[in-house]
Length: 113
Length: 116
Image 1 (tube, rainbow over the protein chains, first blue to last red):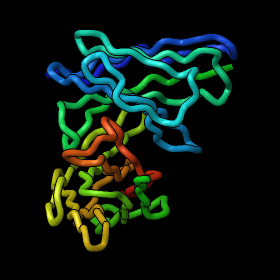
Image 2 (cartoon, each protein chain N blue to C red):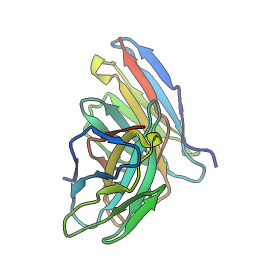
Image 3 (cartoon, chains in turn purple, brown):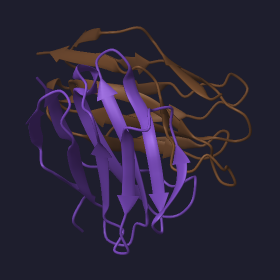
């Protein structure tokens, strides 16, 4: 079974630009969560989508948004990029159920110049 | 809110040494607990899980027991290998019936280095 696929693996942007990251979950998984990983803040939850609906959201500004398509693939968008948005962005998918483990992709490394 | 605290790192061991990485948590209800491992340049891989009190998760020689009385989920391995060098994360989710959908709360991570 194919794992979670994130594209692209690396991105370099400049301040003020916007960026879209993509995530394809494991087949059959309908829940997709996004996380930001930085050396200073560790792993922080961004949001979760299920059946094209955002069910949960972390404490990030409105510049961070996402969506999920009918095939469960998900995208996240960051607008007006800031230097502090440089991070590894991880996507995870899971079957329905809060006791189910999440399975992570290898992430997208975003660097802001 | 929910929180996870891992032992201060990094941890440096010789091959075949015994490993313990401490993890304690604060949560309401009955969370599910997980250990994830991250190798350089990769995402997180699920190492083991436990979904209720006294459950023992195990995988690849690693073990952890869900201790509700001490709110702990310590990771142990009897004999580490060089290939175990990685960053280890303890995490919790609200568990069955919880409403904080899709959110894992992570500890700060523990860097493990194993020398030959």
